[in-house]
Length: 387
Image (tube, rainbow, N blue to C red; front, top):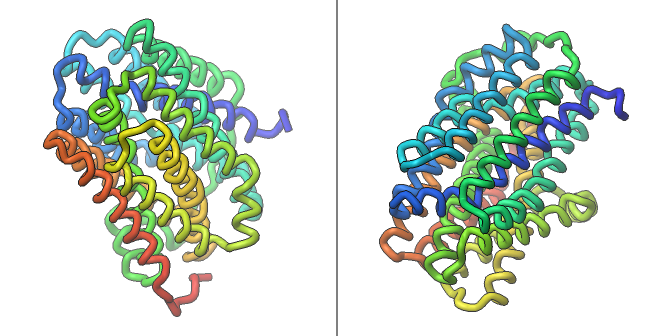
């Protein structure tokens, strides 16, 4: 196991995810500390995704020519610099600068996925990609809780901790990650981003799966983008309490990813499980406007966390099954572009609604988007996956 190239890439992704999840509950409070309104907080969260959308294809091409490991290290250095800028920020523009720097170089996960594709056989790839899911589960379990604990000593300390973790991931990539020869993509699947998106949207089944994934990420981005603001407005939570609440959500996700998911998929299949997950997300987010007591908040957060924990892996599997084996990387790239667009829209909409004291409406809109995903899944299709 330790001789496998998947071991160091798992460590790299795990450390990166820890750094990222340290910042999730902190950023809204950090920005508000410098006078940002809820809408500006939403724009701040969206700036990362917008920067990532612009730079993603460039980093992908660089990794194809220069190699995965050098590009990954460059990306991690940018992330580390972005966290340090945040930690030393003395005004709101520096907070934006830190997020933009991180976003412009944030190819860590995409390049890690490409590396896994390079070092695994097609029949082993799904299990290998499961390592990323485990890393995310660990990160969302521990990262926000650690951030909440550190924030009591000052809002800059989680940013310093994230920078330190990012530096560790640079060392792991430099000294543990072996160089591997790049695998050329099969003929006929290359093309620019818009050409690739158009190709898959022209086919009914991949289009349906991509729209379902877009609905998931949009709903999830509205949840992540508005939760800290909601908890501050409705419950009076500070950064520490919000971090612990995100940690509770991560605990639910870790329980699902740690063993229940496989059994649920075997029993119900990906489509039924994704529908149930979407409905759970709709209930958890849609009813947040009724929250005034902690016990009810915990119930809804638990329901929503269950939903998002099963929807993402189920939809990813359905998406890859909607195309031929040599198209899976390309269609996942399209889903990543759509995810970035959703991650731009979601926090801005959430910030605008909360800025106008429409806390219940924020939950209802996010829940309605999740229901759209469930409706799309219930529609039958006669198209067979490409072979």
